[in-house]
Image (cartoon, rainbow, N blue to C red; front, side, top):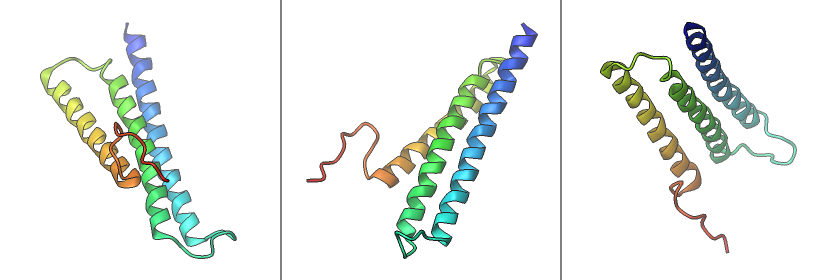
Length: 116
């Protein structure tokens, strides 16, 4: 059982590393696109920078929440640890929802806006 617990812990840490990498690489790409605009768009767009950064952070947060959920499997179910993990997941979920509202202008459960 200890070996399985160790592998699950490594898996959770690996997924956390992937989430951090996605946020870091996404932010670097967004900043690169902002600093060096392409041939097609000759001006820098602050709105596009915010959109690209927001998407990278949103994806990274979703992956970090998944890592937190996997990490709960290997922790001892003490009230302190469960409350700490619940708080972390709650904060990350709130950040994800608020970022999505900021980027798309609607809550995730709302239907897509008509662009007619």
